[in-house]
Length: 551
Image (cartoon, rainbow, N blue to C red; front, side, top):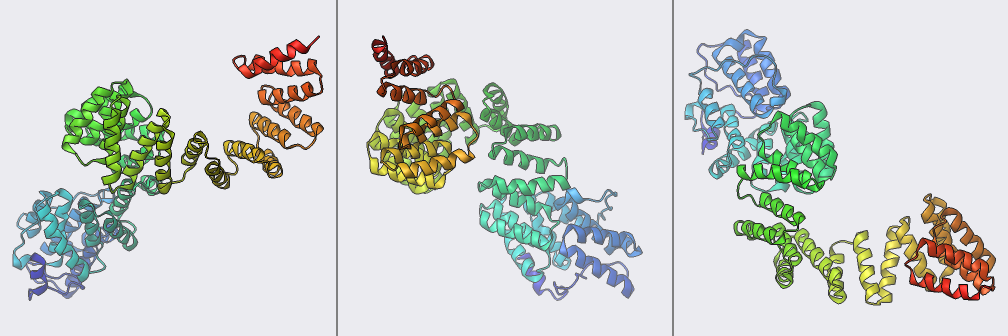
C-alpha cells in the first residue's frame, strides 16, 4: 500500500512533525527551511484557518516563490477549494507548476481516481491529498484504498482534521451513519470551522428522523454562509420533514434560482406541493423529474400517491407494482401498495400483504405503518375484535393520544368497560388539560358514581379554560355532580350564559321544570333545543310529550 511505503521509506519525515520531504531546486537558508516546515505543519492540520494562514504566510515571504513554496501554496488552495469553498480567499489562485507532482495528483483526485504516487514523491501531504478522491466518486475500490490510508494518517497525525472528516464521508457513503456521525462530530470538536462536517451531521440527522435538530445547525450555517445552495437545499428538506410547508416552498423556490437543473430539488418541490394538496402542480413537476430520473422508486411512489388523489386506485396499483419489481423489499412501497389494494376493493390481497409485512419486516417503523393501515381498515369495516388486536400491537410500539383514543373507541364498541376505564385513566394522566379528555373522563367518573372527583376535575378545568363552548360543557357536567336542585340550576344557567346553543343544558333545565310540573318553562327550554337540533328524534319526542300537557 502507498502509505505503508510512506511509513518505511528512509527519506520520509516523522509524520508528527512538519513534512520536509518536498524537493527544492536550490538549498534554502535555515530561516527559509523553518518557514516552509511551519507552513507544511499548518497545511497538515487542514482546517480552514490553518490553510488560509499557510497561504498568507507564503504570500508574505519570498520563500513562497520558491519551487517548494509554490507547491505548498497550490496544496493549500486545492484543499480549500475542494473542501471549504465557502471560505476560499477572494485572491487569484496560485499558479500550478506543470512539472510538480501535485499537478498530476490534483488531476487524479478530481477525476475520482486514487493516485499512484512515485516512491520518491511520497510525503505526508501527498498522501493526505490522495483520499480526497472520495468526494468525486462512489467507487468501491477507491473507498477501500482510502480507508487504510485515512486510518493510518489519523494515527500518525492526530491533529489533522482532514482524515477524521474523510473517514466520516467514507462511513456515510457506506451507510454506516452512526460511525459517520461520530467522525463528523469529532471533526467539528477539533476544528469548529470545518463546516462540511456540520453539513454531514445535518444530513444524518435528516435521514435519521431528527429534522428538529438538523434545522438548528442549518439555520446557524445559513446565517454564516447565506445564499449557499448546499445549505438551502438541506434547510428545505428539514422544513419539509417538519411540515413547515410555507418555509419549505420558499426555500426550495429560492434554491432553484441558484441551481435550476437540480432534479433532487425539483423532486422535493413536487413532494411539498403534494403535501399541501396542490396536486396538479405536483404532477407537472413530477413528470419532468421522472424523465430525468426514470425508475426511481420514490418518484414512482409519489406518482402512485397522486393517482390515489384522483381516485384511480387501479392505476396507482399498477405504478406500485412496477416500483416493487425494481425494489421488492421496500417497506414503504409494500405498505402503500397494501393500502391501495384495500381501497381498490382487493381486500384479501391487501390484508395478506400487510400481515406478511408485519411478520417478516424487521423495521419497526414499517411494521407500525402496516398495523396502522390494517387497524384503520378494521375500524372502517366495523370488525372490532380484529381492530382490537391491531390496536394492542400498536400500543406496544407507541402510546400517543390518537392511539389511546382509538383504543378507547374500539373497547367501547366491544363493551369492555374495564379496558375503557384503564385507557381513560392513562389519557387523563397524560393529558389533564385536554378538553376532549377532560370531557369524557368527567362523564366516565359521573357514570361510575365518583361525583366528588369529577367535580374537582371540572372546577380545575374551568379555572384555566377560556373557550365559551367548552366552559359551557364543563358547567353542564358540574350540574350533574351537584347534590341539590338549586346548584344544578345555577350550573345549567351558567352553562347557557357561556353558550346559548348548549342543547344538553337546555334539555336538563327542561327536565327539572318538567319534574316540578312547570310545563310552560319545560316547554320553553325543550322548544329552544328543538330549534337548534330539529333532526334529533329524542328532542322531538319531548316536545310532543310536553305540548300535550300544556293547557
